[in-house]
Amino acid sequence: MDRRGWFAALCLTLALVGCRGEEAPVAESAGAEPPLTFAVLPYTSPSRIAQRFQPLAAYLEAGLGRRVELHVSRDYAEPLRMLAEGRADLAYLGATGLIRLERRYPDGGGFRPLAAEAGYRAAVVVRRDSPHEALTDLGDETFAFGAYRSLSSHYAPRRLLADAGVHLADLADYEFLHRQGRVARSVIHGDYAAGAVNAALAARFTEEGGELRVLAESGPLPPPAVVAGPALSRGQAERVARLLREPLAGGRIPAYVPHFRAPDADLMEVGRDHLRAVERPCSGEGEP
Image 1 (cartoon, helix red, strand yellow):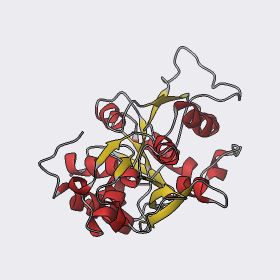
Image 2: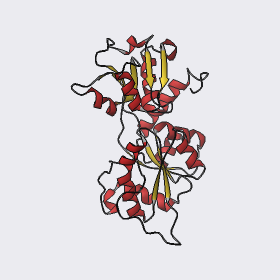
Image 3: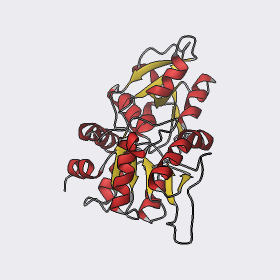
Image 4: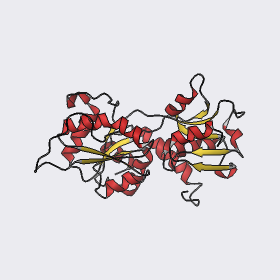
């Protein structure tokens, strides 16, 4: 099965599930199924992740009749390990995580992407008062990336830099700060001349009176995805997919229900292209 077929057949991408909300808990009995574990990549602080996913977790619990427990992962690789080892039933993965699953399990491996949000973009930002007007100005400057395995705060911005003729060796210094909020704040504070974040976060800091300015923006990127692991039965996975993509099927609508859709195979190919472009020249560098 080729990569496009793997993704289209198994995927439905992005965001969610979590710890239990304030709603009435799912009743447990001696014969009740164990809770579902949902691993979420640490794209922001644990408190923000819980705030975003808790209403959805309660919604899924009500729809499934089974507890859903949120696990905020320590790094971008942990959700993949948890799925593969059967320690997680669901995971919220970025596009790079999905691509790594494709590479490791070309036959699918029992992983089933379930629901997708809309695509998004990456941005390279500088302070509003920065003298830099183009990516070509960043040679011999300092740069802050987010997580190494992040498409929006590493691979796509690094591709933008490379296309402008600026490579890691041309920078005075660079660092991976893991969370994009840290990247934005470090640029605002002057710790780095420029940084990489997703365009939605950049917009929060660049609106009228904001402290940052967008120097360059990528094209549309494939969004993160909610993926079922081999430990979750096909029937339960299909039920989760239906609840995510058709929220009315779950009855009560939670306060926060993202707009899910079928995955976009063309966008996934864009993500693969970014990874290939960055990995070729840096194959000897390894990860930081």
